Length: 81
Image (tube, rainbow, N blue to C red; front, side):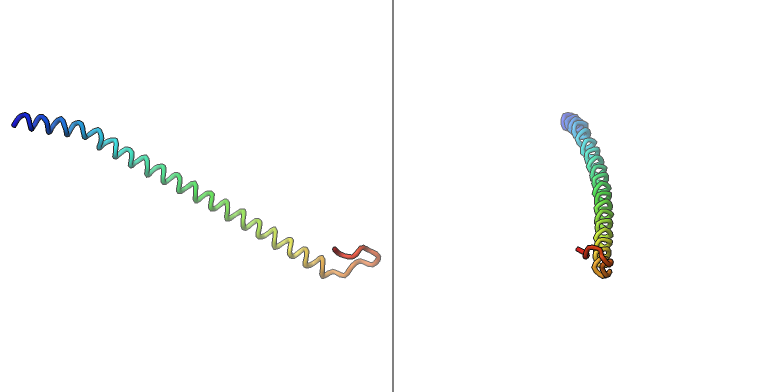
């Protein structure tokens, strides 16, 4: 009986280290996932800002092109492209 109790204690002590390691690994994994998610959110925000800027620039270019073609040519000046 003492042998079984001793064997059980040894197994419990040996497996405690693995349990602690597993808990730490889960904690590290969650922390890494949280940081990765934050990084992806920041990249998404940067991409949205870049697309909004490109959209505004395209809108400005379209407007300038429209205005340039709607103006009558200056007398004696070159015709609009």
